[in-house]
Length: 238
Length: 307
Image (cartoon, rainbow over all chains, first blue to last red; front, side, top):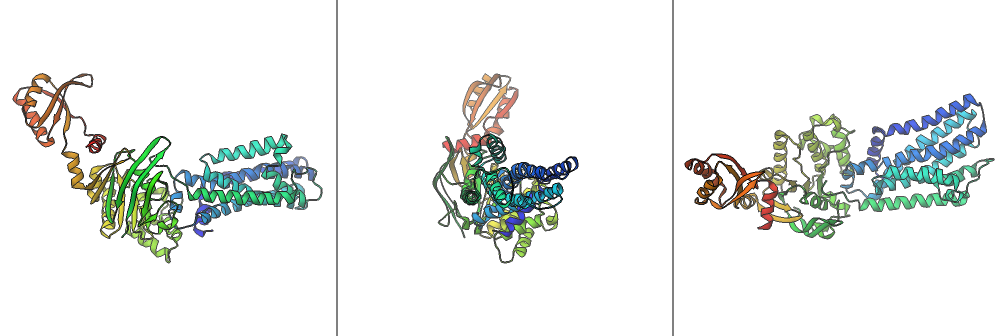
């Protein structure tokens, strides 16, 4: 990793307008949590639904999408990446620094709000809330790696990322159980399930299988991203 | 002293050939890469900067392949054409970040030196987003100079600059060339290039059209038949008077812009320009319009390619 790339990326992420979304999305979840708390009161079941469907199912992929594509795609788009690439810095360290930034941001804007929302809803951070927090962490790592790759490969990274997260994981995954077995969200949830005592919804894939899958996806996506950045060509005549 | 060698390099995008079998050597001193828009200059510079692989042929720096070879950037400084350069950073932060990315032993000193070279020390604490075009260009230049590179590649550095900024940049480039660096910049304006570059490479339609010092290029461009379109009160009588003059090679009765007009081919630009009004006056023919028909840069270049 490269300290300069890390600091440039962090500043770039927090300096751009899209970072507002990073703050807005968790706030929506916290507002929901507050509303549920006031309307229904202390209800562990409501907490499980919100953390599963919203924190893990919506907030995590969206924040990871904004962070993962945001750390690299805009720079490629407007050509700023030239200043990083025209340096004797290994492409691996550029990609890994960007990925690390995205993961840290995603954890900050997903895992922390998950714990907060759980605390708001139940007045405590007891089982299964830590399990959900752990799920968002492993999910953040895999999602970010995928979305950084997408940001390197495609000019429409955000669109493809949204299609994957919303259409495949949420929509198709919601109706077709088989599809759920191929989804970062389900794999992340399997860790939550394993760490918690009495969750009703079972994941499609056991944690013993899901965690290696998450690791494999993370490593493979990062490796391809490094390869692709190595041969990134910029368009000639504009 | 470094040399970039482009050997039989071609680059195509699908069916479109952007650079067609170009061979050239860029050595120490200032070289101007001249050509109309779309001639393949940017593509060529991208290949020299390692941001585009040649579809065939090779591009090397002192024998080392440039594509996918990040170590060449220790020797190359790159000033891209694109404007954007981390607008949220101040000039000083930006230059320092570049120095750190080069892993220089004393990045702070290197950044300050580069800022001083482009005379941006005073404005260095302002955010890049607030800079004028000329300041931005100089800041991009500073970022390319932090590691004191032997080779400097500039893609259309004069674009959008006002005359004063242009003068400053010309002076800076000249200094770099005089110091023995290999400096290459692209431009589509001959006057710009000849103020700076001792050596000029001309690209037209993806091909390497001409090469030489600016006098040679200028001569190639001016010592050629010039074509004019003339509208007058009496085209036929004027045509016969013109063809009698030494400076005229051919006259054709034709049309231009919906009306009748003469198409004149002059052998010598200077003599013809002086003689034409006198001929008209002597024959008492009123001239309505004298139009150089091919003074656009593209036609000059086109002439260079076909000759």
